[in-house]
Image 1: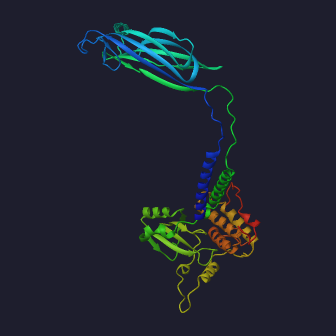
Image 2: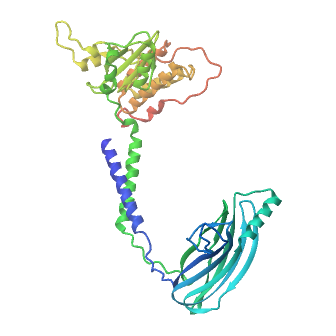
Length: 474
């Protein structure tokens, strides 16, 4: 299994590398497109503020950007100038039209004040310019805002005067022309008895590519090796993944010593399983630990040889007894926990006055002493199939949810599996246990009478073993 994991990691890494290789090289080669010309548009606002006589600025009459704060109480006029320039990297034919909109606005309303159009003549060269101006009467603006506030009952904490040119230019080179636009905007914010200009300058750039068919892509330069590596590694991941999934039930169980080490003090070794109890199989070692903690009972450990395996193959069972029932977990189980060997198979003490008993001899004796179905031919597969069908019929009289039926059906399926793999002797051992469980029987030839059920539902027969010979491979 470790080799499968290592192989998966290697193939996944190779698939990732190959995918990156393909993505990095699988692109068409194209010829870069050269623009016909590039251009830059810039807009710059400036102002000249006329002041009343004041002490703050030593009776200075005018202020320009950066020379001081504009206060509404001492500012009469603000003359705003705008300069637009279009610059190209090659001589072009250009003309521009600017529509300047002026409006007063607050968070709740907008009041248009003026609109003006400015045009330029077409000219040749590497730049085009356009100028405009607007005079702001500060008293008129504050009075208008106060009047709107009185009429609406809405008193904004601030309002703004916006001067917004919309400039559209036509630029041509030879027989090709294009249109470009530019939208700078100056805002005079009236707040806290001050006038604060913002966005005094702005710039944008672009390039003009004449319309036409796009360049044809060149030949892809993807390496054939990259494709082969990618498909091969993806196929390897799929194959190993399928193998890991298909063999998931054949994986080694958890190491017994590792999982039982923390609970050594609670484990008691016994030579035989608890007698006269109803077994309740659990799926995992943790379930046995939970049962022992809940009931306050020790965990009984019994080691026995595995039916049908080699002489040194053993199965370890753990029991937690609760009244007339016992929870059981089997580690390395190939047969159900109900098939238990006699005590001498775990301890194997030497006979008095004689040599030690061999384990294989004990297994053979166990097979001979275990309950067997009377009158059977243990080497006859047809006889095994016949008795499998009879036991299956007997199980149908039990409730589907009963523990007896579920446990017995599991035993029967395991017996059939052993017979299909040619291990008929071990299969008869399990079938003998089922015969003893479900008795009494009238005769070796047919099952004994049972109280009939009014509605007996048919169930699939486990006689699929009849299609296999005793020596067939799984």
